[in-house]
Length: 597
Image 1 (cartoon, one colour):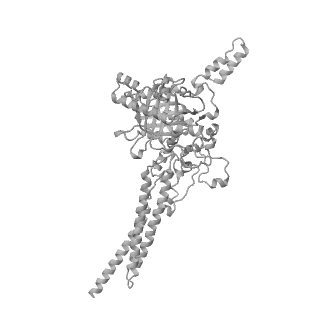
Image 2 (tube, one colour):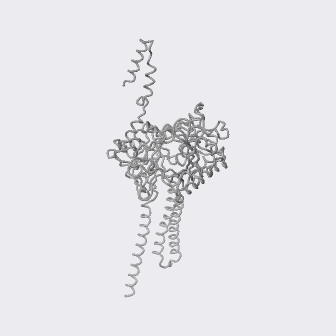
Image 3 (cartoon, one colour):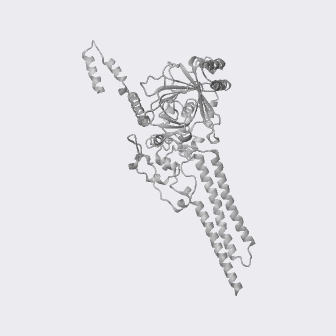
């Protein structure tokens, strides 16, 4: 339908038929149509149903436990708003749209609200930001528009993966009228537990539910937690019903709302009145969609499916390490209460929305002088950890903005993060894969600011001096996983090399001291040959240690080992030993010859 043409016809009609105007009525109806609003949810749902029928998806058994726990690996990405439809289509080819029980089925997404709890010191915020062992996040979540009827009380616990533990999310379900009882620690746990057993739950399930409920209610009371931050978004979930092996969720129209500044009335009011006007500094609208890929991989399914890997390397996803809606909302909406902010607030694409919400004080100044810029390593990033992890910003900072040129992770950048970095300079866009009819690999994958540099002899011998070992050839959103033992391994390697150098120096010094004065020519030559090699061992050990420590600290993708330096130093040592062996063998041969004469 020609929208403007139809609009003009109605306008002419009202002009000549004053007694029966109809323009406003029909225009309002047209504005409500999905094709006018750009809402193609029904198309997505139908395509999902078609692909699901072709795959013959089987519905898994529903988990009816009152206490539900999840242990899974989660990776979060930013997606440009213009790429949301592409990502939806790429996912629904392999996973169906998961409609919640309360969904009408007319849309592929559902409004999701989460109210996060914290105290005046923002103890939970700083714990989650620092990733402290056992850091908690407590929230009240409900689905759908309007006032909630069923509320999920959820607890997320952070655990360090390097010690063999996995972060877990636990939750239980309550009615809306019971929220006040949970927040004030007056929830009738014993009564509910007895009712669960009477309805058929096992004793173990009831005990687990009781333990979780008591821990959450006691934490709320002891830490004096109150509603602090609310996140609201339209969530599209892709998952085979009740099968959490692979789950993909896409959050659009994301905004964070402050839950401070109103009377909670002894916790009877735990979220804002939807009819109350929200000030500009009480809400922040996030400029991107957020994609979460959640995997529960065990046993034979330890590797992610190929289509998940292809999606991650499609170039449409911008990985943001440990991104959190709760952390972002608190940092932006409560700038006077936070002691530290996450690194991604310095991203150039988020700056405008943060300033519009009144959170400009957490951002680096845009009017810094040249002298002030020279005093810091990354003038576009704030102090502290933001300086260290500046290279992880998907769209760069205000000094190196890449809003128009940034490209998400591709197979080339993934290979670079695994050490295959030379090949990324020979990238051929014509050989790109095609995924779902969309060429996800384009010429835009190359860095426009990259300048061609020639390999030098020193760079060939020592990779840490090579121009190929440059961050600009890999995507800034690739993140190396770091465990504490990596730091100790670097120190241990440094000590081993230093020990070898000191041993060689001791041997050469001993040869110089104990060599005979009347026949010291060759011994001194041999000792003086070992001295520079031992010095080279020590200098090489120190240089590699500092270079590798910097890459570990900043999590720079690429190879962290030197495959040529050890061969060079080892080869020089072998040559000196072989020359000494040949000289001594010749000396013995000449000595025996003289004895025979």
